[in-house]
Image (cartoon, rainbow, N blue to C red; front, side, top):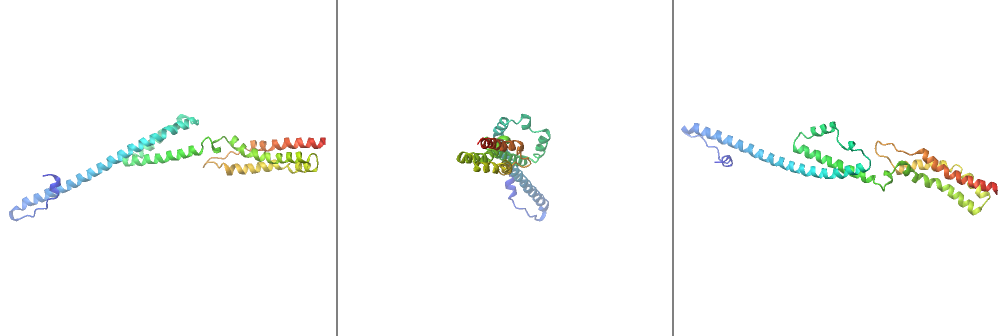
Length: 231
């Protein structure tokens, strides 16, 4: 008789002189039912653990597939290889978080996949075609430069249209404080258009910005002034 059969047998009631036999039979059936419950629970736990192990293996393969190209991309961007390897304290902490068995390992791997997704998003956001990924000097010149050319270009247009006269002199005087205005607008614009990442200080390259805003204005003003003096 198997445990499944015993677990379905009703308890025998004692009759007359059969009380010792009936009591023994009752104890046996109770023990068999308890053992059957333990066996079923163990089988269920084993099945769940096997499913968790299989899911953890699949998750591990997916995380490995995600990390390999990320590592290659970071190496291309100049990140040293030693920075891409976990430190001993990190390894110890990761091992400590996985002592709970396959379920804990699966949870840790899913968290790692989330971090890999975040890393992909960060790499895409700082792609080579996005100004946020460019060096600060190149990125800021894109803003300081056009602002610095607005007033000098207008001064040249006025001079070419009106020639040596009052209009050119007025344009020259009005344009004197414009480099400072262009620099201030560029300073604010860099912070608005190229916001830094959390915890990173924004590099506005103030010296470069001041030079870019000042040089065109000085050259154009000097040229117009010499033309006015010569006229």
